Every structure is written in C-alpha cells, then in structure tokens.
Length: 247
Ligand code: SF4
Image 1 (spheres, rainbow, N blue to C red):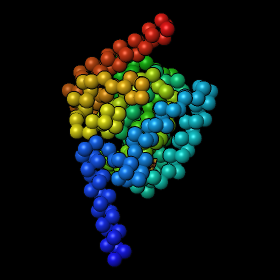
Image 2 (tube, rainbow, N blue to C red):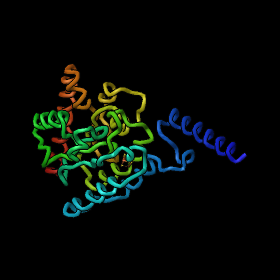
Image 3 (cartoon, protein in one colour):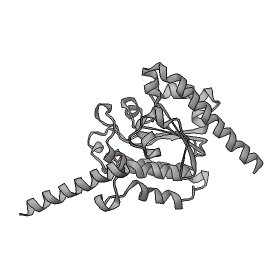
Image 4 (cartoon, rainbow, N blue to C red):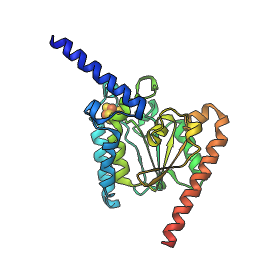
C-alpha cells in the first residue's frame, strides 16, 4: 500500500514537472519542492558584488563547494569539477555548456581547442581573455561521453553560476551554445541560430547569444554569424565604456 502511494506521488510529481516544462520551460517551486531558476536568481537581485579584493576568495569558495557537491548525478563520475576562471572585474563573462575531457584534466574551463579558438574571437574584438574575461560553464562537472547536460542537472548546478555572476557582476555576458543560450533566454524551443538574433538582459547585464566555439570548429559556415555577434558585442561594450566616461 505504502509502495503504491509512493509510486502515485512520484507519478503526480512527474506529471506536474512535465506540465511546468511544457508551459514555462522550467520546473516550478510547487511541483518539485526544489529551488527554481527564478527563486535562485532572487539571490542575485539582492546581492551586491563584493569589492574586487574579496572576489578571488569568494570564487575560490564557490569552486571548493562545487568540488564536493553531490546535487546531481554528475558527481558520480567526476574526476574534478571545473568552476571557471579569469578576470575579477570582467568586461565579459563567457558561459558555455560544461567541461570537456581536457577541461576536467587541466581543471580549467575552455582549455582545449574550443578555448584556443575562443581566444582568437576575443583578440579579434580587442579583449584579453586573462585580463578582461571570465570563462565558465552552466554545469561544473563533465557529463559522461560529453553528452549534453539534462535540464535537472542544469537546474541543480545553476546556483553556482548565479553566485559567480553575483560575485563578479560582469559588464556583459556571452552565452555560447544551446544549453547556455536557452538558460539565459528562457526560450527552450529555439535554436541558437534564432536566439542569437536578439539581444537580452540578464538581471540588468546585457547578454548576447552565439554558437559554441566547438560547433564553429566543426562547421565553418557558422563563422560569419559568430563574427556578426562579436561585432554586436563590441558595440555594446563600447557603448558601456562611453557611458562610463560620460557618466
Ligand atoms: S554538475 Fe554541478 S550540481 Fe552536479 S554535482 Fe557537479 S557541481 Fe554539483
């Protein structure tokens, strides 16, 4: 009898969650009893970025917490988590999908061929990856066979990203690839090619979407749209610089 009740409760929860995903694109608080994307983001609204001198420590604490996190199944195959790294007062935060094998080996996000290519993108618009960018991913542990992270894994890991954004308050965000693009835009049915045509704001931070460098390496026809996006990004950054000077 008890087993039947448990099964029924699980089934009901699944129906609620499915309905939430279909109607809202994310899980609601009432159906899952888990933190939702929106509730997690509330912490960002109220959080002031700490002074630059404290940010290194705050980021190290986030990385340390991710390293012992067991909030999703990805911790089971984890060799090490990869939280992200870069400038403490970033002009741009670049958010990808999740660490790959090379990232897991080195402990640094975007450390493989995609990262090398990303540096070229940044060079092209006059940005230094080390001095002006912070690179990270939606999820901090590598999915097996580099598969795409599932929605529940992204949700479980989202507080780390929110904390990183709250700590650094980057001036702009560039979401690269489908997982990050859908997370920041909350448009779960659209492809990167259509999401990238609009500009977004994420909690007051200008946010653009483009293809993942790894996808562009596999498909050179994406180079032109990415270049267009980088020019847009450069325009936004220049506009923010002008406002700083004028203001
Ligand atoms: S992917 Fe994120 S939520 Fe999942 S175990 Fe790793 S740090 Fe925790």
